[in-house]
Image 1 (cartoon, helix red, strand yellow):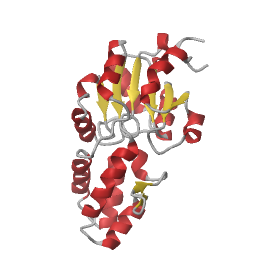
Image 2: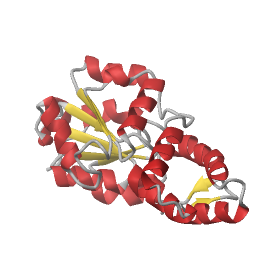
Image 3: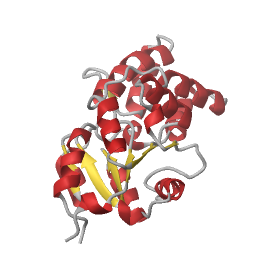
Image 4: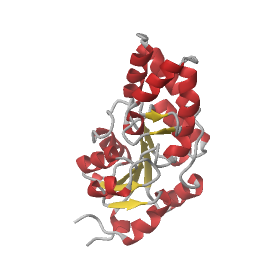
Length: 239
């Protein structure tokens, strides 16, 4: 077995549910955004909630919600259909503008955590199925945008997870082979993309998916990204 700390050179993070706790961020955001989007119409609110699998009583997304791993474009299309709006591009822009202002709940204290990885020599990136502009806004608001070598959204030109292309774009950008890269994420989309790209995949439990959902596709499942440094020290590269 080869020690991971000797072979992993780059770390790619998902954003929502990974860098930021999903429920602490997006459940709170949706509870405020969907009523505004409905224009105060209870029937429209119920339709939006049903289409996006958001439990209005619990004020929480259900595990099967498109919002968990879907792209900004996919979510916008669902919203536009419910609202019977044909100005799809405007809906997408409105969604991105609102999402950029979402209340952020970092999974760990991000700045010292990421700085520690940088100081250890790792190349760092973010690949999210959210819009690139939203990713930049969130990282900027969290004060960590300058710690990443690469930030990619589903609209950055490389596709969206579970397609491996955006992950491979990160590897090309930082000049690190996929075999020497690990992807961290809270959804099966993240781990499927990692496998397809030929890199290690580590699941985290700060999203909606539980360990049994992630374990079949993951090299490891951690409680949160704060456990990554210890995993890098003790784990072995797959096979």
